Image (cartoon, rainbow, N blue to C red; front, side, top):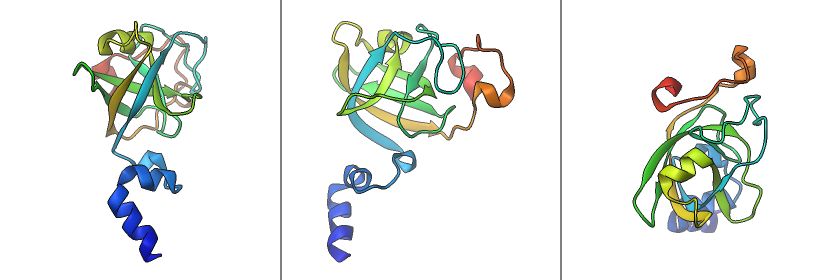
Length: 142
């Protein structure tokens, strides 16, 4: 047990996530982001808006606001989690085309990013009975 604690302390959050600790507890993650343009309905029941400022994450609750920084060019965007993914190994977040434009990763398709959780989620379109055309812009999500 002492070895596990030492390894987690030494390796930090990445080790905790790899050891099975919920990534939803993580406040900051660093890794590869990609963007997606396919789909009609997101996992939380909203219509997918490719130009919206939304993202897919494997574990963060729907409605969670995150700040994503492209570590290659310094661009930052705030996104709302409304879908699940990415489903490609080694990636930590999929951003909508609108988010990808702001981050400058349309051409490359992927980038090394830092994802910072800004607020805990819980919102789903279904839970509030909101029409599927609902889309989010920064301030409306808080």
